[in-house]
Length: 241
Image 1: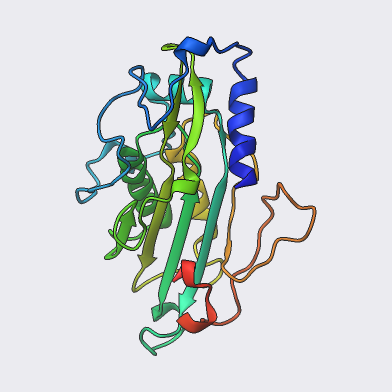
Image 2: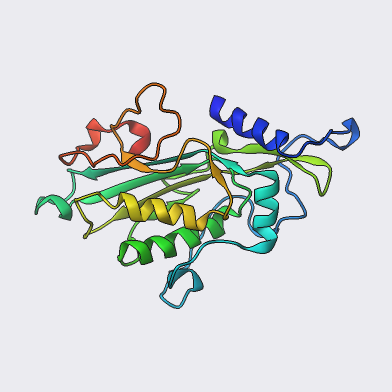
C-alpha cells in the first residue's frame, strides 16, 4: 500500500500545480482527456493474430492521445512479475509442466483492456509462442485489485481522478524455455506495452515466485534464475496460484 501512495505523491509532484478546492472530486472518476473505451478494467480479449500491428517487428507503445496523458499525469508505475512451474500438471519432463505467470501493475493511465491485448501480442512475438490457452486480465482468476488503483491530478480537467491497475495471469503451455523461464521476453513485453517514458519505480523484471528480494534492494532489474524445480500448488503463496 505504501508503494502506491508513493506513486500518487510522485504523480502530484510531477505536475507542480495547486488544486483549487472546488475542482477536487472524490470517487472513481474518468478523465475526458483519455480515450473513454472500457476503463472499467475488465479485459475481454479477441484472439491475437500475426496480422495485429503489435505483433510484428520492433514495436513500442507510443499512442499519442493515451500516452501523452499517461506520461504527463501518471508517469510512475510499480510492477510485479512472478512465475512458477506447476508440478501438479503433466509429468513428462520439466518444460511440459505449465509455466504460470502473474503480473501486477499499479495504474499507468492506460486502458487495461488495450494494455493486455498489446502485451499478449508482444509476448507471443517476443517469446515465439502461440496464443496462451489461459489468459485472464482483470477478470476470472485475476480480478480487479483495488490496491492497484492510483489517484492522479488531471491538469486538463482540474480534477483528481482514479484509474484501475492491471492484474494479469497467463500460462505457457505446453512449450517454454527452462533456461530462464521466459523472464526476458515477458519483461520486454511489459515494457513495450507500457507507454514509452513510463518510469518503473521499483525496476522491471520477472522473478520466481518464491524469490525474496534482499533488504534495501528497492530498485533492482538484475537477472534472477528460475526455481531449480517445479512447485506444487501447496508450496506457492495462495495469491499466486
